[in-house]
Length: 422
Image (cartoon, rainbow, N blue to C red; front, side, top):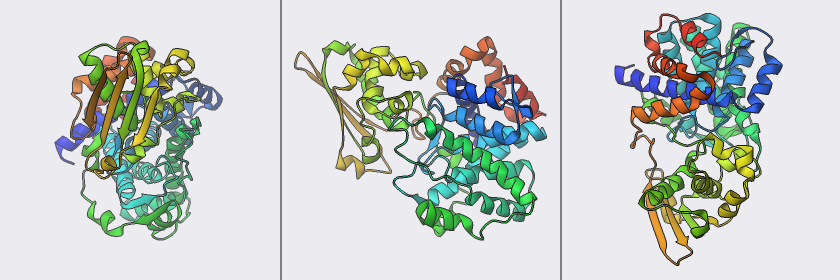
């Protein structure tokens, strides 16, 4: 693990911790903490303790609850939260060094990404909770110092513990989608426990499950070829609390707003053209916060009416705001086949703003800030962490950022875990 890789991995780790702590302010997450705070290991973001599998579950749920966690295009999903959540739960039980904790996160990120990259997920499935269980199990295996044979056995068991997820759950308002990563984190811990109890998995189960059951194909050659690929260096980190595929349109409207302010009443219509998968996020009347986070029309409208696309812009009251909903109704989204044809190399989005005075303003963007080829400055990520953490921890956020940003310097991971508790 070269220094540059570990440094970037620590940045991803810190960013993910910020997303987790922001998610703990959601009512659904807080309710589960109350119900399952039955003792066990310390649960970051709270004053509670829970059994390790439940701690992993709640941490994974919190990490995706406000849609701030990182992602990876090559893997086809969000590897970090699937590795970080079980690694924190296992570290809370075993108290390794900070260096061992970060190494386990990197191992889990790598293992999950390799499977995600090699498989072709069924179109109706959401990537959370599918191949992420492999990353979760690999992170736990690393912290338990399993040898190669035991690690392989753990991953083979984990392959049968992935979820049958739905890609449309979030679009239709089902916050069950946020549960997927938590369940995978929990099952990663379970896989390691099962192997230690003598349970065996299906031989070559990864290729079977992810190539035939959850997925439509598994490219064994591509899997073999990525043994040394540093997937974590290809991560994308978000600026806004919504699906990555809404953020091309958000960048376009940001650029137009920077040119000249726009009031909602000035807008006659907004047309968004983008690639196929992003064009599915076209709902103009989302029924819940998660549906709003997966809606290009609502994301653009709430940015104009609220002045940002942060967590509060997708709260229940923001979703119900009549001014924002009226503006979202004026936004249309369509696929531009020529944009789809330029994937996976480029992610294009064109936004046309039609104003009541008859003028038309337009912006085209390729990718968005935070993408691997357009990395956000560390100062921007530190500010994102502050916005995520300070509402719950006040000025302690700066100390927490410094610690999360350099876990290798910690003799005990327990120091970080305790610092990240209320």
